[in-house]
Length: 222
Ligand SMILES: Cc1cc2nc3c(=O)[nH]c(=O)nc-3n(C[C@H](O)[C@H](O)[C@H](O)COP(=O)(O)O)c2cc1C
Image (cartoon, rainbow, N blue to C red; front, side, top):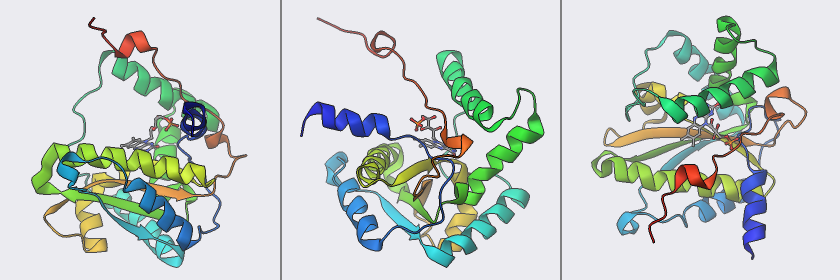
């Protein structure tokens, strides 16, 4: 295993926003989870837990999730960012515009962007959805550990040719998810990961995001 191999996986992975309906064999989902669980965590607490939907259950969930997103009030367990300013606002806008341009939503087209945003709640057509939770008592550090789990999950899936997208959008409706999946009160719903096989020809999958140069993200000392 070389850094080049790892970089190949890291650069091939992207957030997939249009999936084919074909289900992933359960053995492969188990392989992805086994790999993802190698992520480091503080005290090796391994705070992650996932509920994974497959087949018709995903379709039932999709329908219920869409209804909730249409009528419900966003109340995430983990408070969403209060604002994005400076470079963070710039980067957020750049990836949003890249998506809208790809799917033909023009700047200022609020109805069009809202329609694209609602695609989150149809899981972008994915045949599987993982709902990721962490014990509330571990707070931000449990959530931090789970971030590593999300990355490892996405890379392991990529290695098997399976596309993924982490989705905080679904965690807007944490109380609904808790009721729907019988998630204990003492766990925080962090995000979802929808996954399956990419619909490669779909416009939503036609763009890639870039990354800041090193001098923007590091201060060398010594
Ligand atoms: C924790 C987390 C939550 C995210 N939530 C969403 C989401 O709700 N909807 C969405 O379309 N993308 C979501 N994304 C995907 C990001 O927009 C994406 O990772 C970023 O733009 C970089 O693009 P890439 O993943 O294609 O490299 C999320 C990513 C992460 C890590």
